[in-house]
Image (cartoon, rainbow, N blue to C red):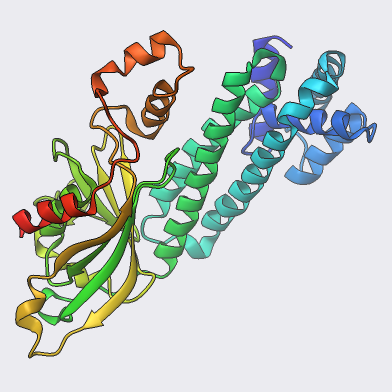
Length: 372
């Protein structure tokens, strides 16, 4: 089908309040062809009507819509290659599951009782971005003949990244529904926190386990994270929890609070509490900070608590600054393989003798001691 007809098909889907676009319709057709169920174009139309609970509004709109589905069905049937499809069928299934969960989350946020949920609009925006990206991936899956062995590997990785994003959005919604009650700095408990800091979605695990005083501010904790992970503190950052944001000095216009006025233990009080740290916002190195343990200190111990700062364990070298975010990091790792193309090696020659597995517990603690 030509682009004009595909765009019109999208308009009809939109008029029925369906969030997806034609790639999902193609995927439904290809799924049927792969299964051998022998459905017809009319059956696909019926499934879509049932899902929407309506037909396209307007005179003759449903007839034109069904004609477009028929044309798409015929085109997919003529071009369908079962051997090619077997390579992408598992990816298609994962994407359709992702889109099904996307619909559930979007419907939940659209409910009237969620209207006053703080941070709802931001989460919906992230969902909409994920939908657009996933539709693009589904379009690629629907045309396996256009992919190579290398690009199929890339496609699988991008689907995995999309699944990670969806999990992240689900976590954020849970945080919005169950926001922690922040205590004033003066009321923050004297604690030592055991935290696991990880960068999710990377092609190779990168994480650190640290013990740190809960009495430090987020501003001080930023420097701890920089030294612990191995960043150079060249770019901006922000903390995030349950739809709230903290930045240096705060920004009323951008609705962020002053990180220098927020004590770490006021946000991380018990096991499994979660805080997000974003570094280099253009590349968005997203760090998840989980509480693994909390030690409450008596008044007799609080003097020494101010000086607790150590790294207990870790894995993986910090990605190089300016390597292009998680996707650029994946390409960097590919460039280090012996069979990498010369062009790819040249693109990342600037990283020198970078070792992805290079983590030194002693080295990190030396940095933290200097920071302390």
